[in-house]
Length: 255
Image (cartoon, rainbow, N blue to C red; front, side, top):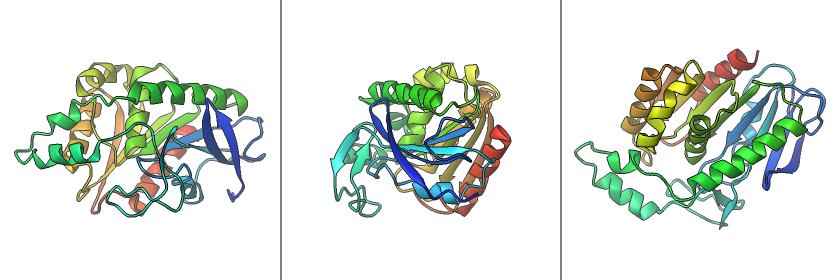
């Protein structure tokens, strides 16, 4: 199935790019839905090309919400210029403060990162939840046929929403995210026991250390989530092995 037509709609106050579906991206004939959240500093359409590279069950739609906070054009997080389109964020990050924390973790103690509860996370989660409610209703998504995921900051928001709500999910995609809110997340993880999760991370990630991803993996596994860990040699990115693993989870969860 070719997924080339993209429709822009608004859900929960967020601009959402929709593609896929056997009856057109914006129709309400039903079918599974995959929602992917972009990372900090990227544009709302940053992940839209993934819809072309992820083989999924027939009738599956993709939705790509744009984060509510605009950083303006030309924003640079040290991984190249994202200025071709409006750079956005789910919550603000003090990049200099984060880098100081990472540099100060030479002993391998990343607790300053893993214990952090970002200001603005709760508001982002609330708005995303409202957007998902409206999307599921408008697109007639069958109960339990939603896969939620994201990249970097988007992955952390997807994880946070999954743990703090009872929303039925078919699967979770965590690409290059990290463990945050540790004291609050850990007690909530067993409630998602059995949830299929694909987590990926680059061993040379310069922004979010690989060891912190391993900590998140271990906590999820201990809590009983059905996690597939996809490590790769690389940085803060989504290489072909991750696309393959993500497609596998989507097909198992929605097929």
